[in-house]
Length: 191
Image 1 (tube, one colour):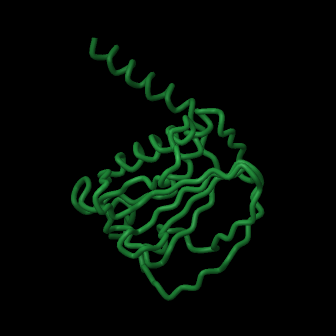
Image 2: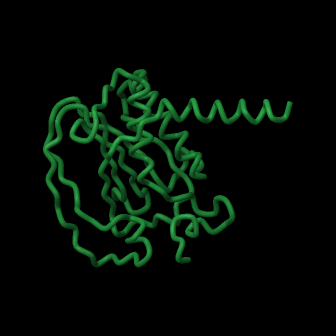
Image 3: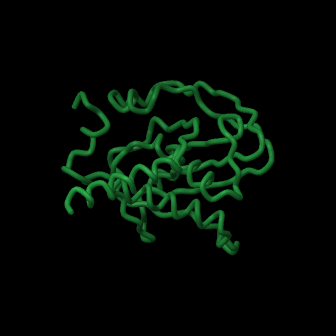
């Protein structure tokens, strides 16, 4: 009976992985981000606008699920991070930055590095997720996926979830105090 239970769990995990296909994404970040010091988050909502579309609900639930997985607590009272997202159906020119991988930068946390701008001509179907540090009143991380990197169909729930997961997989910081109390060790094997 125990073996049957273990096989059932493995089958469920394996079948859930089959539905996920990681999309290549780009991200950039602020050298002033306190990535090891955040504990709480909330989702940014537009004032007076109806954000209850099915697409927005799927994106929001996927973001909330991922943030909770990383140990963040959702709070509507003075959260450390405010998470915003936007879908761009039309093409756009987008400024990103050519930076060291965030895992490499976090080892030194040099704030005097230069931001080397990188221009993107993004085609239709871009999903952008931004993290704002509420205390600093600035964007500290953004990730984006577009048809340049993989086809996102905003009307397909599975593809939409895959896009959100693919983007947030690039944000690899556990909430401060989550787990064994020293989350930096998970992200930096040299510590």
